[in-house]
Length: 323
Ligand code: NDP
Image (cartoon, rainbow, N blue to C red; front, side, top):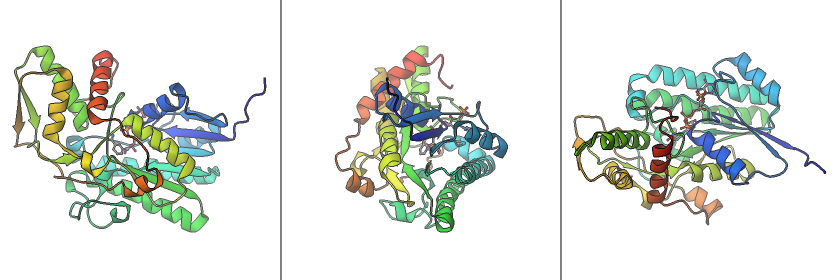
C-alpha cells in the first residue's frame, strides 16, 4: 500500500466550536479532504491560545503548514454589551499569539475569521470588504469589533513586512449544530431555539422575543460556511478579507426568524415582542459580490431547511449541547 504524502498540515483553532465542528464534518464525514491534507482540530482544553508558550507548544507538536484560525471569545448581543473589555483583550491576545507563532513556524497561509457585526455602525448599505475600517462599530460590541478589525490590520502588516499570506474571511451570522445554546451568552438563533424548546416543554401558549423583531439579518448555515472556508484555504490568495454571506435578498427580520423557528418546533402559541430589550444594529446588510464573482455557482442551503435541521439536532442533542 502506498500512503499519500502529506504535504499540508492544516491546524484549525476553535476546532470544536460551531464553525470548527462544521469544517470537521465536511472534511471527515463528507469526504472533502484531499489525500495530501492532514486536518487537526484543536480547542482550549488542548492549548489556551491566550498563553504564548501554550501556543508555541501546539505548533511544535503539529508543525502546521496552514492554519484556519477560528478560536475567539464569541457571544451574542447581551454578552458583548456587558463584557467589552474581556472581548477586546482576550481576542487581541489570541490573535497576536496565533499570527506571530504562525510566522515563526513558517506557516504558508493563515485564514482568520472576522464578522459582519464589526462593520461601521453608521454606513451606507450594502457593506463590502473595503468599508470595514470606515467608522466606529456599534457601541454594543466595540471590544470584539476592534479586536477583529486589528486582525485585518495585522494581516496587512505581516504582508508588508514579510510578504506572507495571512488573510481573513467575514461571515454573516452563523448557526447550526454544536452552537452555543447557553441562554445568557448565545447568539439569536441558538437562544431562540433553546427558549422555544423550554416553552414547548412547559406547554406555554405565549412566547416573548427580546427586542422589536424588526432588525434585519443575514444568516449562513455552518455547513455552507465550512465548505466556503475549505475553498478559501485552497483557492483564495489575497490578504484582503472576503465576505462569506448569503445573498442580500436572503436577509430576514428577527420576527421572520422567530416565526420560522416556531414552525420547525410546530409551536402554535402567540409570539410577543419585548420592545424594552435592546435591538442592536437595525441592519448590517453585507454584499457577497466578491464571493459570487469568484464562485458563481455556490448553492446555499435554504434557511427553512437549515433551521429545521438545527432544531432537529438540538432536540436530539440538548443533553450534550453547550447550554
Ligand atoms: P464557538 O464559541 O462555537 O467556538 C469557539 C471555539 O474557540 C471553541 O472551539 C473554543 O474552544 C475555542 N476557544 C475559545 N477561546 C480559546 C482559547 N483561549 N484558546 C483556545 N481555544 C479557544 O465560536 P464559533 O464557531 O461561533 O466562531 C468561530 C469564529 O467565527 C470566531 O472567530 C468568531 O468570531 C467567528 N464568527 C462567528 C459568528 C457566529 O455567528 N457564530 C459570526 C461571524 C464570525 P473551547 O470550547 O475549548 O473553549
